[in-house]
Image (cartoon, rainbow, N blue to C red; front, side):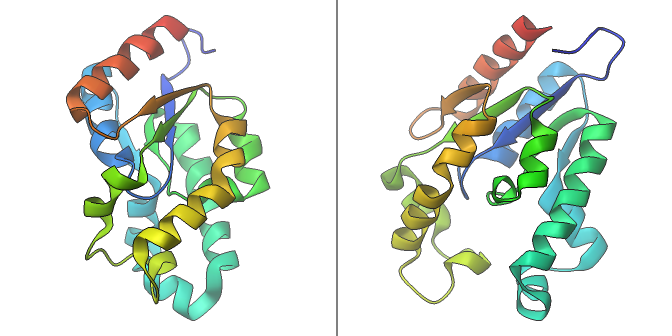
Length: 172
């Protein structure tokens, strides 16, 4: 997918709390490349995500996110996208040119991960129920962009990272 002259790029997508940041950092370290979390970049440039949603709405946030994804892809490295990045058609189109790992996680495994978190799309109702609904709404988009899938439900993050590194090295 990439030549030796191109920057090594690997994109991680998946639902909230699938482990994209945790796994992504480990994968980047093993591959010797940078790690970019697009949500963290958005926060650094525009403020907290819940505040962006409250002040400007989800559409505006997705526009900021698309720009952050484009910038990250131009830099290369391991790139972790926010859970909803795949809802934007422009973002999905950009991802077609890159290896994309879809990190899945079961509802049971994610229950502990999302408790007490300030995630704007989970506000105001049973967080796990909402998480399941959001995943169901987005699953086809994750599948559309994914080159491969790894489950993070009940396995050590380092083992998952090692498997992703092995897969990515096979793609070169």
